[in-house]
Amino acid sequence: MSVQDRIRDQVTGHPVVLYMKGSPQQPMCGFSATATQILKMCGAGEVYTVDVLQDAEIRQGIKDFANWPTIPQLYVNGEFVGGCDIMREMYQSGELQKLLEGAKKS
Image 1: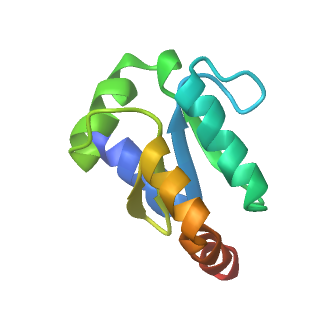
Image 2: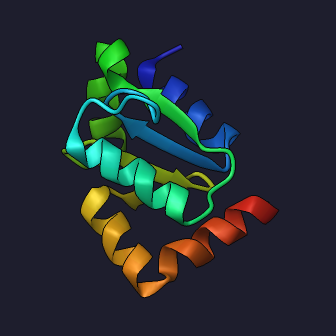
């Protein structure tokens, strides 16, 4: 299975997926820490996280998958949402909370 197939399976197999550096309990960069905090403040239930530091293929592959150069990356219902800055903007506008509500019901 190619790395792109593995990523596709991850993002379509879970309602909410966060590719990050480290884990929610121990983020390894400030952006990943902020992303997990935003999801927590939104009341996101089960978030499937992938630590890109554990797999170099995934770390590069996720950048190619979304054509997005940075990590973290959030996917909801199989769709790329964005990175930390976009998550912050969406949270402040209330848009992220609505998107995550839809993910819970799927």
